Length: 286
Image (cartoon, rainbow, N blue to C red; front, side, top):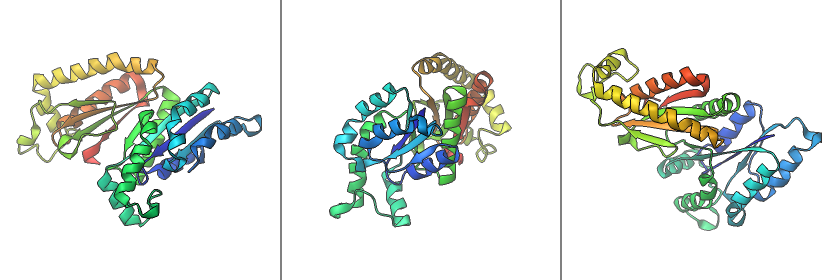
């Protein structure tokens, strides 16, 4: 049996993620108290319920501090039952969460007893830190809409299920903030910047003119070779630890030229080795 625990900050897209998994054929339960999880898994593994080979449960901070502190033990108990367990954790920047609650006018689950929204968000982040630390896949939804999140969940879960480790190579711009959902972050701002070429400024790293500009600089090829060799060495080590997901982020200043170019080249290289288990995302071009 395969079980995915979906957790994260309220407003970051947990329900959207569960709906995406349900569409992918998972039996989904939302807002399950963590203390009931082991018993529920035991029931789902019953011979009477053989239809539920793939299930997903949503866990939030309302399980309480005592149960959330026991998350490590609960995970060990479930894995000891022979369950293939993965943890997906969703988060977003505080400003984004505040705006989402304001727009939807929904109540945060921890705002009872007069607790203000910003304080509830801080408390929830602290309560869920133990789950976040055990996440196999962390996703920052600050700049992601519901359709993009659904697609990301489906693609990465299906890749991990069918082809081993799911590798995401994403570009970003440091001036918009570094991503918090990465296993590796590489800074390529030392490379020549097409932004300073007037004819290239409005293009992206996907355009041939930008690629030709960067190809003419030996430093760019040296950077590509270094990143390629590093990942070639270490991806199998992560696979050896039974990791299902790996996220590599390449950052330049604006996330438009250099990082996009290198992310595309790296993805093309590793697709030649790993097929469709490799995907790309360009955060600032979304």
